[in-house]
Length: 216
Image 1 (tube, rainbow, N blue to C red):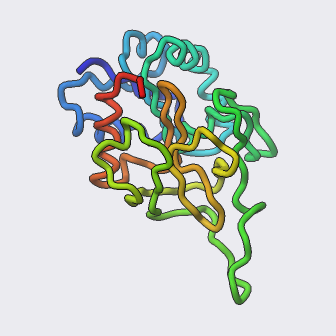
Image 2 (spheres, one colour):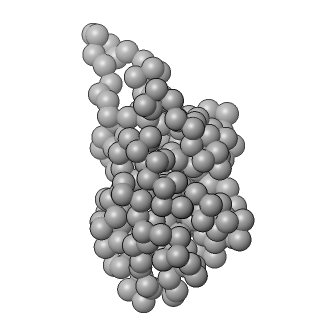
């Protein structure tokens, strides 16, 4: 089934992602790539991410992965981003007093605390948003194959990509406000949730990814 490169730039849930990939694609070569050279010839690229966006961007660019990712996208290589791996593909993040991201998608990344409504009796939404949420599939996509609409996936994040006025949303959920659970364009698919922590449906999405040719 070919080579799947998980980009290791010092910020990510690498081993749980690699373990899940090995489970769904035992015939694939899953590589934790610490340099662009180690990711060469990969048929699929996965961008994980956990932590603060500034550290993630510094690590990603220092590893030389920014040009690698953009070249892979231009070449039609299937790409999957997970959590902060999705957020670094956006234009700009409000985290860390504002950080420019890769601008692969034009949307911003916003802080929940600025936008969440107040609950009755003076209660507030907890930040970070952590737990299982239903995801509405807002478009047909090969990565949704075999996954029932409004299945539940596991989230943990304090920043989000707006779903409103965003034509590239592939999946939507709500936490006080609508937010993008997944975005997609061409050979790129990225999720705010963690498929590797989302039981059967998360493994199904990863299986769909390693079998995806990058076309819709």
